[in-house]
Length: 176
Length: 428
Ligand code: SF4
Image 1 (tube, rainbow over the protein chains, first blue to last red):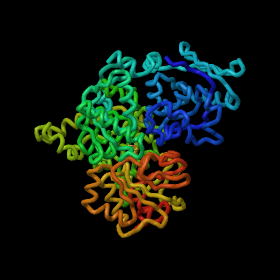
Image 2: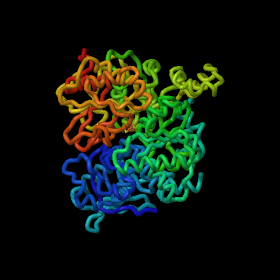
Image 3: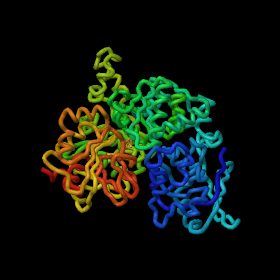
């Protein structure tokens, strides 16, 4: 199983698409590592710099609706993963991206819009860490050792099984 | 309670339900292209599982960067070629007989009503035009599909779009697709399939139905779906006549069995009367930002691109040539036409369409995805704008810093002639 949690990167926009997460011009790369430097390179978001240290050190993305829409490219979760981001927290996802995350044994957590609003309002703007407690189904946002906010989430049975197995190939191989 | 088409397909292909609501389906067709498949192949080899569940159900093509533009894309092609050969995949389409997957595979009669189809490509929803459940997936799903012939889905609910009314002049299937996208919105159909119904879709050709189903993903839908009818039968007949002992009535009733029942349940029903529809185009970077072209005249363009799995078929080239005939591209506007498949390219040549377009100043390329995803054959420079018949206008889609306006082939050519976005009804 992968490890989850880390510094939070807030992306305050809906409909962030997979072309923005990893542009098509890098799809001829044949290793996941080669995608790393290009993560979020084309993201349209005021003041966003894909090369900033806060982007490079993140372990968790918090964002809004329909994250990962567009292309089916699994290069999108791979680009996140090689940058150490194994958890995304959003109000909703595009279907293929969401499935790709769990198929890679990564976490695509859904929280209600009100929770996401609160997260942006209370945690964004200064560095914050996210701790993921998979057993309890909770995420904790912490700054300087103090908890700012905690939220509960639930994973579907299949999603949890994929995370536990480390991905869909491992899961399917032992069953079908 | 009756069932929708997709519910019937799920019931007939259900292999396992490991968790409530998670359905593992057996797959009829697994399609592969050279961008998303090589990593799946490499992973299978690394796991010592380089096998395929059924070589006859796997269809493979080199289409996205064709011919290869550099060493890396050449390697991707080579991996596909060697893999297809080593596993005896007969339906593998290399340079000289290839084309954009979602135009090429239907052209070869691979998709049948009631099929389950996956591909590592989001526009796999196109094949729902044949009454199939056809879903785009990522590389891991593709990998498991290749190895085991299964894929897991949350069963999608169905949004029914009733299309009625007669379209006016120069209003095409693409305009209908854009209007549907505007109405449902980007992400408005996530975890749903969109079922196209009504007299207006019934009177459309398979090419038009594919154009509409193709853009289901722009609303986030898992698949677009049309009911398989006589039009579907006519299209598929050369491939299936023998299977049905040359008995059309028998085939039609088999098709009919897949239709959604009258008392099936829908998540939502949307009625669209096409009689008032005008030629449309997108602005900005989201496919649901759709406006009538007559309001967009101030947007200048640098390039016109005719092609892709949405609008690179023969009927599209005919519409493009009809507008282009007797005109020239505006000074400073570049035009590129990429017929979607080799067969379409040849047909367009025989009909003289390529000549008409070339005379108008277009460059005609080979069949490829090319500029559609900004990989080759017409990539934009930062700040440049393209009137395109493709399906996606995301920031940088056709090249870093470039912008794409989506529209029909007739509208794209009209815009090319005027050098700015133009309603094709204004071109004589
Ligand atoms: S033509 Fe464009 S949208 Fe269609 S499969 Fe090729 S890259 Fe994708």
